[in-house]
Image 1 (cartoon, rainbow, N blue to C red):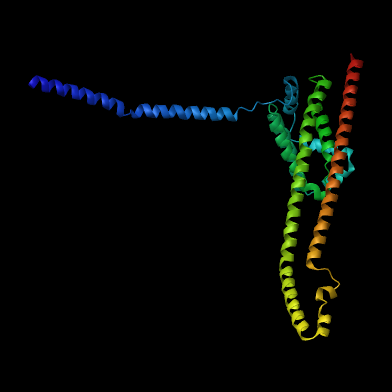
Image 2 (image 1 turned 30 degrees about the vertical axis):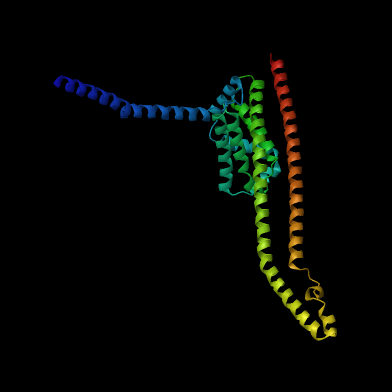
Length: 318
């Protein structure tokens, strides 16, 4: 009997031990598993963020040329660029003279930071376009001082000319000109798009504000007119029951006697005027866009002419 009890106790202990192994989890194993799962999730999220393939703005040889030119530049590169624009355009000179000293320094600082930011992002075309878009948006505030979008064309030409000189004849002039022409064309196309996008946004915001103001001003007047119309209608009904002669005189409402238009008509006329102003503004904006596009095409022709001149001088020297 004693042996059978001891064997039963041993079997029961083994069963309990096996059950404990199955039911009780190991905290260390769980922590390791959760850490591995978290790492996999983080890696997958990083992979999804970096899934966008980067497209370089220029090929390797042109990127080296552009970076070498900017390494040779000084802190006054923006002032030199705008000085070239001032020498060619009197209207740009008038615009700069209308600015304060603080605004002039801000204009030059923005251009300097813009150029440096583009050079740092030559491996990502989308990032360069985004930065150029933001640079164009910053110039809408200068519109009241006489800024025009076709100044971007002259600025792009001045950037190309100034940065080609910074190469100091290390590379072939035609190669340097081609690199900077390609880069500035991409940059200032996005700059122009950013300018017009911000201009349209501000115009829509101002139109919405004007409409809400008109509706708020016309709201109390409309309610008062409705009250007056109800009172006059009641009076006309009462007079109509008393005497037919008085009723014929009261059939004419005060609004018919008054030659001035009602508030509804004023609101309609104001909205029509606002719509006509918007149409005129859109037409002017389209004309500016067409002029800017024509100017960009002229700049491309001028750049090709300058490149041919460089090639001709190189052939003569050789």
